[in-house]
Image (tube, rainbow, N blue to C red; front, top):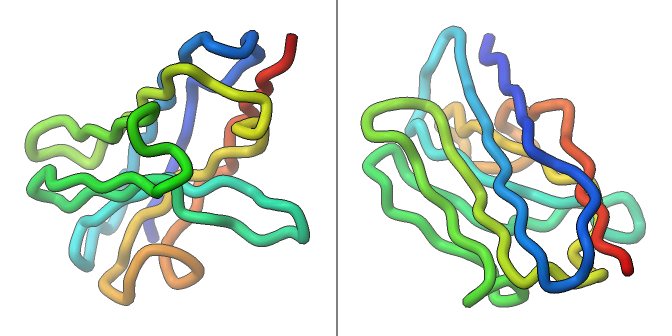
Length: 119
């Protein structure tokens, strides 16, 4: 079983920055890819960014140029640097660990961390 813990959420004004952190621990199987998702209207979750065990990262179109994902070398610790935050970035952000069946519902989720962007 993999235990995933996020931290770093908070309340900021538009244009400000936040950095989220995520640590995965336990029985680490699968590809080791990790990612960030956020809650969207209707209850679903959209992928915001993802990164391989080797450190190759990608971000979604809606946050490209503002968000960046990174990973500690050789560790199951990832970060999401969020710059120029907008009110539409408000939501619960979840970290996900891939067990070998892809990121998302088949992976392990953290409890989520709240990000609020408001003036």
